[in-house]
Length: 109
Image 1 (cartoon, rainbow, N blue to C red):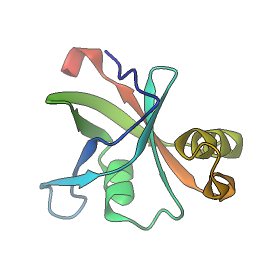
Image 2 (image 1 turned 180 degrees about the vertical axis):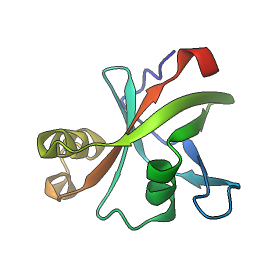
Image 3 (image 1 turned 180 degrees about the horizontal axis):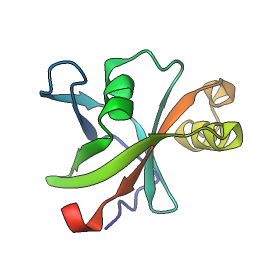
Image 4 (image 1 turned 120 degrees about the horizontal axis):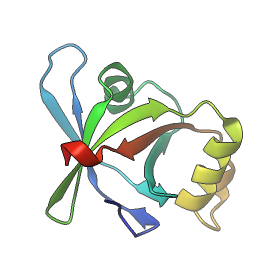
C-alpha cells in the first residue's frame, strides 16, 4: 500500500506521549520510495515528539487510513532531499530540517 502523489496534505494521527490520546494535524508530506516523510525546522512540535515516543502512527488521506511506523531520519543528506522534494524550486528547500519517515505496516492496514 502506498500513496502515489509526491507532495500531498494528509492528516497525521499520533498518540499523545503524555495523554495517550490521538492527536491529529494536517501537514505537507512527501511520498518517496514507498515511504512518507514529514519534516520541520526543529524537533520541538508535539506531533514530532509524539511520533518518536509512540512510533505507530496513522495517516489519513482521501478517506483512507494508512498505519505505519515512524522513525526519525538521522541522515542529513536524506533530510536535505526530502526538503527539496517538499519545496521544489523554493528557497526554503535549502533550510535545514528534521524529518520523520513513516513505513507502512501492511499487516496493520
